[in-house]
Image (cartoon, rainbow, N blue to C red; front, side, top):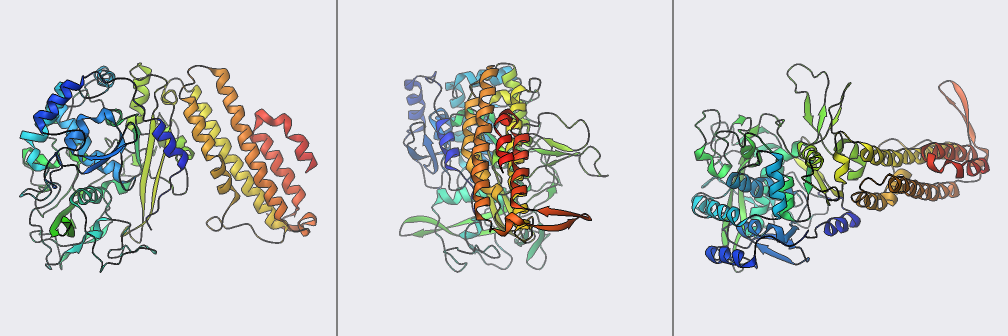
Length: 603
């Protein structure tokens, strides 16, 4: 099933962090002149319904919370006025950023060659008039005709793509939460026999999503694909983003988010690196097949633009005229290019570093997110700024390391409202179906990303560790009480645990703590008070959960029972279990230890 984990508190925090940081340096008359030249307005530029550059199809939220749809050119030119993209599912955000927004900006404007150049772009607050002219030229005379969904050279598709069996599939094949083929959610309102009419804009969004996240296993064989056998291709991996957990830094508006996802490269883009819509400009290579044709290849990425716009499937959207206008009801989805491995230049993942990798294996592999855990519980990996000195461990993403370096050079202010969004899909049954979706976001103090000044990072990780240890102490109390009642502890993968309820109870406080630490500066006293307040929160919620557990046990738990554990007889009683819990709580919350012994002795 396609389910999402998202908290109200995180949405509130993200919305609050989307405020504009001052007036835009480019006067309205200049922008009006540019819009007039392009024949557009901020309310949605006029264009055919399949024109992604000029048509109003991409949903966004403005700085004042207003929702609208705009074309690609409109969104980029007014990126400083857009708080965020307003997309159907969180996993669609990296798909749109990677497959469209970022590569257009990178290719049209180039990458910053130094942190100083990055800082100048940040100080602008938005794309300059000259940069907007370059974007308009890129999405107009240069490549504008390649951003059409139903043209002779359709965007991110193969014109005339046909299945070997001549059949087409319903458009629901592009949507993980809709029933299609092997992917049948338990409570889906659709079956594979139903059709879903997608407006061109929505079809474009799910097209990009499929290139990034599509399920693995058998795909329909395409006419002209010499590697198809018996009408199909096998061994297809998931889309590139399905191979790791996505991590994206976000800013207060879309312009800042684009910039935070822009790497600094001293040499710029690699020679011959082209996005999928300009593949014909790439040097000829027998090993790499054009994404505009039905053939595919197993290959490494040819550079950053190629990686971001990697075409992992060969797809064709089939439009039909309906009473509501042009709609996409059927599609053809076939095998596409296969990424040989996730390159070390991947921007949007953390890594698992192996000190002694096996022969032929890389020292770093992309890291996946864990289902059922909030983003702040994984801060240990997000804040792992250095490779482990001894043994294996986590290593954070390039973009977060770069953000810390920018702050260290004062290119980013210390009180900058940095956000981090994570998302990922969990696949099942040979990765042929989607079982779960993971999505979360949280505020993150920029100072915690300083490589050489770890005082704030150490404090944050201590807070996370305390919550985790208290949660384990509650589970231990629960297990001891079950034994005292004559039962057995819950198996590791079964049942509801008190730790889950406890972590949910403190979730909002942790997010508020992180948001508050964004403006702490060098106030060590305030940090100490914040840590004391955090311990009070943990203690209050832990005692509430513990009291509920103790109130639920039957009277026989007071007498308890004796069990052999590792050859020794151990007595399990409710009073003894409570005493051990309070002792552990005092050891974990050491700033409040003076208040806890009396409670432990009383128990």
